[in-house]
Amino acid sequence: MAAIEFNNLTKRYDSGIHGIHRLNLKVGDGELMVLVGPSGCGKSTLLRMTAGLEEVSSGEIRIDDRVVNHIPPQQRNVAMVFQNYALYPHMTVRGNLAFPLRMQKQPAMLIEERVRRIAEILDLTPLLDRRPKALSGGQRQRVAMGRAIIRKADIFLMDEPLSNLDARLRVEIRGEIARLQRQLAITTLYVTHDQAEAMTLGQRVAVIDRGLLQQVGSPQEIYERPANAFVARFIGSPGMNLIQSSLYRENGGIQLQLGPRRLPIPQRVLTDFPGLATHSEESVLVGIRPHAIHLSDTDSNETLPARVCTTEAMGHETIVHLDTALAIDNSHQARGDQTHLLVQLTGHHNFSAGEQLAIRIGIDDLCFFDSDGEAIR
Image 1 (cartoon, rainbow, N blue to C red):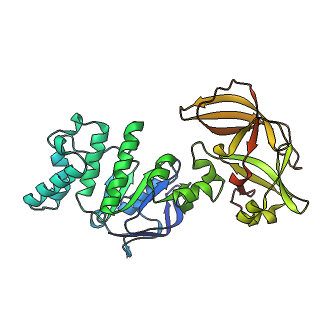
Image 2: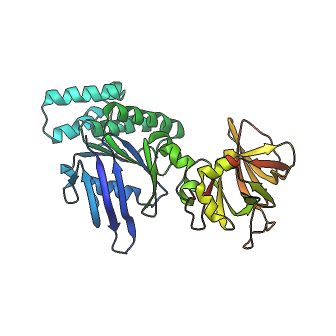
């Protein structure tokens, strides 16, 4: 087993563009760390540098406290699982599983025993004599995983391994990966652009954007306390609503301007976000999770009028697209034009386009960001 440490790691291309810029990150021995971010953010570049397939421009990669920047890939004892499976089409499942051990010139009896064991773990025993073209996408991915596992590598590197599978298979194989990783306790770096996959799979999640590490933490921590506006938008399905607003000191407390309404911020919220006290009379971004917006049967000083644009019925929940007057101008006054909100409601709801609703926003569930998009703590 091995821990991974990236110290001021940078990948700079000849064009001057940074694939990764001064990244610092530690992955614990036996940990499953998910790297998540939009396409082109640098997460696969980081994986390839760890494997030795990309050169490092500056900084260090340490595996088990050994600097590996200039160590060839074959000497790093890492195993990769790719998006496209990379199976040998002319070999059977047995042959694909055995190939890494044959390359190491392992004894035939050991190879046969290891193939049998891996096939049992991954439920591949009935498929050992089939070739890849006779397998489903999920079966091929299990073979690719088995070929990585059989080597007894120190580190698993998984580059979007589920993106070619349908939704049902993604859930099934995702559970398989989590079970295997716990069973084998192998340090794993898992790359995905799917934030739902990151949240359900990772022991910790590292969010990357444009080559910069944005936040590292448990899935729940990143969801509840995003470090900046990018993380707030990217993590969560649907993502967080972000609204331009203002804070005011009034009657010994702090109030939040949301469109035509001023809502007092309770002391419990001010205790959780002491930095709000230093941002009064300033513009801020308010983050509202779609589930923190509630429908109200009555119109009051705590509710806002909203108009239904469209709905998305998901069976167990309904996503409602609303327009409401929340915009604030430079003088901190309500502008009157419309702000688009996503609302997440449990169960099935029938709304017509143009229907008027009253909504209430849960103050305790808000996040706050300064004018640069950094979280106010």
